[in-house]
Image (cartoon, rainbow, N blue to C red):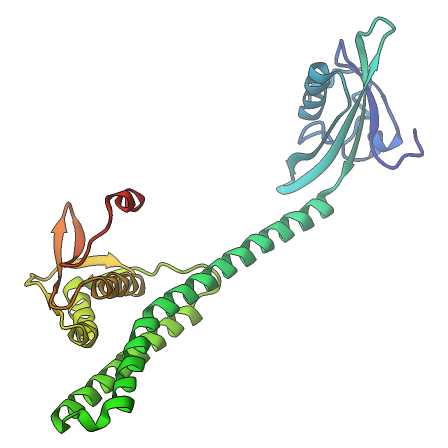
Length: 299
């Protein structure tokens, strides 16, 4: 037993006394409790530390070998991890008489595993954030590009039938849409580049009316293309403590969906009011609405 480099000791299962400890057990730190350094002074004394209690309790329950690599103690301000084994010794009558304890310090291995686990979690979060950015980017620039493709197709196939006044109006819409899409694209890229994993939440005091007005202005050309009326409802100055990029993204999403699902000749109204100390933005349209079965999903 003395040739084994790890603490090895025998506990009397009935009295709880340590009956034997090898050389390593008498010279090396043993994780019986946070204060126990060696078993040299504990021979023939009760083993009342956490490790013994943990091992004895589990062996009494299962009557079999007990093992854990999750035994953690704090010593001198440092966290140590130990692997513990408990082997039962039974009498001829089947009574549990002794428990052989074996332990080894696995702090280096466990610390490396925890670091790897943390790194993996951070990588997963970074990938999830990246996927979210691409999802937002795809949604926010898809509709403007569909509009540009449609209107350029009109110019390509029916240029001779378009009056000069209509042509000037169409070119103005192309310029406005391109400028707005470029601004959205730059904002999203700038937002993404400032993040290092999570989609960071950077709230500040916002004038919500300004965000609504900007959204209506940016969406005007898409609404007009479908012969829709889009308006910001009259409102007093409403302020909120929120993340500007997140609010803009959600508001763009709701507005574009309203334009997509509202038939020609319809109306979209966007307003904001204060309710229970919160700023509440409402996007109302005369479109087809949401089926009752799907409404439950949104709650």
